[in-house]
Structures are given as C-alpha cells and as structure tokens.
Amino acid sequence: MRVRYIGIDAPEMDERWGEAAKEANRSLVEGKRVRLERDVSETDRFGRWLRYVYVDGLMVNAELPRLGLARARPYPPDVKHQAILDRMESEARQARRGIWTQ
Image 1: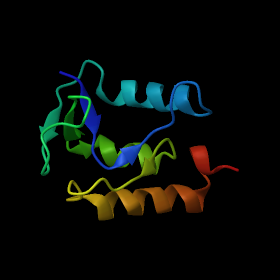
Image 2: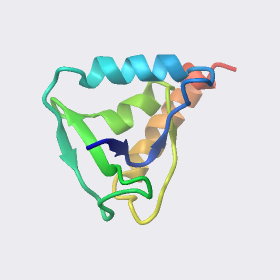
Image 3: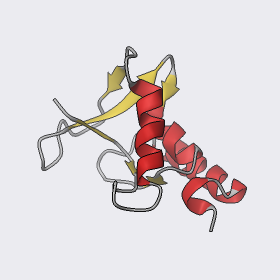
Image 4: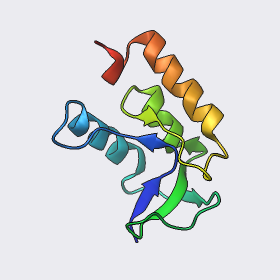
C-alpha cells in the first residue's frame, strides 16, 4: 500500500527541489522500521493511506518542512498535528532553507 504523508506538500519530481525532497525522504525512511499514525481519514482519493510517519520517534511529516523540502498544507479533517507542521515550515522560511532560499 502506498502512503501519503498527512499535512504536507512536497515538490514534484519535475519541479525545483523535487529530487532533493525525494532523496531526503529516502534517507529518512528507506530500510528503517516506521510507525504509521492515522488521523481521521483512512485513504485519499487515489487510495493511498493517509498517515503521519515516524522513524525512531522523528515525525517525517514534520522533518521535511523543517528541512525546507515540503510545504505545510492542511487537508481537513486530517489536521491533528498541523500546528507542528506549520511551525516547522515557519522555521525553514526564517532560516531560508530549501524551497525558501529565494
């Protein structure tokens, strides 16, 4: 089953920063045991599981915006941790990391 990270929107592969976001995600999760947390919805309109993803206690959904490699985007009703995601995006914006370097 494919997983869609709740609360964030990363650049597509054909967009600037898309490859960097993919590689950061890969380094965070590939080959590691992950814990998935559901919010309200089970799946999105494409049938992907909607989840918060954790590796060793780190929420990947928050780490990608913190690195400046995704935008925090609320998708109600799945907004349980949106304040955290928004804070991580704000931190990246202030530090001008990743997509916020311009």
